[in-house]
Length: 150
View 1 (cartoon, rainbow, N blue to C red):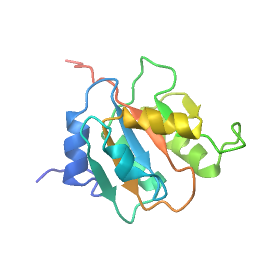
View 2: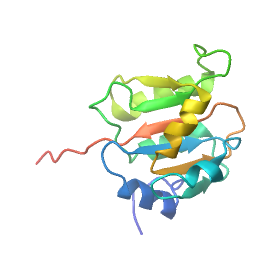
View 3: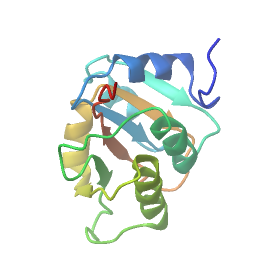
View 4: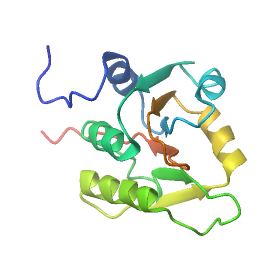
């Protein structure tokens, strides 16, 4: 039993998060993403489902325990809207706000074209699929470092 761990985080997801190293990417996606196919190319070849959670709920739970990389300007990446690369959807802006609040600092969010996102996701650590029904709920979170402050 563990305490202070968000109940939304499954044992498989906790294992992935605890196993990740600095610079590795967690792939968080909506229900429309080709998750099985992409997961087969990741480091762990794992697909972890978080049924019943939308992207903001999953993001809050994950970033409660996962530090984001502070050595790069954009430790969060999102999938661009096809045909409107500069458009930022409300849900994507919410994820950016959640990430900034979790880190307590300003941080960048990179936009990746759809197929570039798929390729980057294949280089991720694992794929976490939510029940998010809104399109373009696809993100990459880059693992940071926890410094020993003793």
